[in-house]
Amino acid sequence: MKTLGNYTILYDAECPMCKIYTKAFVKTGMLDAAGRAPYQELAPDACPLVNRQRAADEIALVNRQTGEVTYGIKSLFRVLGNRWPVFKGLFNFTPFVWLMSKVYAFISYNRRVIIPANTENYIYQPTFKLRYRIAYLLFTWFITAAILTNYATLLQGMVPIGSAYREYLICGGQILFQGIFISLLFNKKRWEYLGNMMTISFGGSLLLLPVVLFSSAIGMHPLFYTLYFLLVAGLMFLEHIRRSKIMGIGWWLTITWAVYRAAVLGAILYI
Image (cartoon, rainbow, N blue to C red):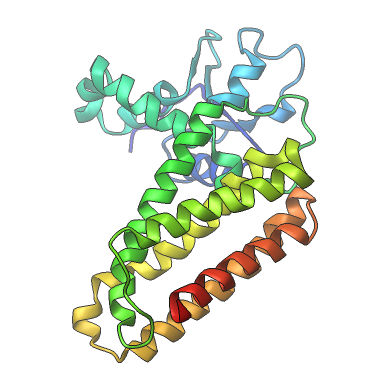
């Protein structure tokens, strides 16, 4: 494996995802032993060409010999292109770079709600961009509702199936319902909370997805699928408590989250 020597990637030490994949770059030999460092520990006079705020938004790759800096998807493409030269043409293809830069930005600007940081002590934090948070809410809402719509068919006999749009309305309604309460109680954390809440919903739907995909092979009674759904809901509840503690918003949003879901279930069963 060809190592990209004399380069250091500056990762976010408060971001679990960033730590995992940059560590993998070094462990697999894509970067040398000095190939990763947290930008939080960068000395004030080190790497004068690095834009500190941009490095917090988009991962920076520094050439230790020339001081040259690349950011974001171009940093990743340089590392990956050195490992797999066959893809260099694709990684230099302008439309592909533009498209992947948008995908990268979508993940990067939402990374703190995908996997929340336990501490945020560094002066430079990722910039909040509303358009990417709204895009994230819409994306997770659509995928979650689509999976739940398919899972609902497995509950036939235990829970009424309902219309094709029911799960979309339920998921969208929760965003609005919880959005009202977070705005009233912790308005400054509104977008942070909604992003975390939809990550929980999205994660729960991903746990249901394998069952949806292999249900024909599993062929279990609807009771099995109902119990599995309740297990996933319980895990989501615990994750909501954990993330609420990290955000410092107490118990009220967890209570309203549970009340909304109980009210929806009651409406489905008895109305």
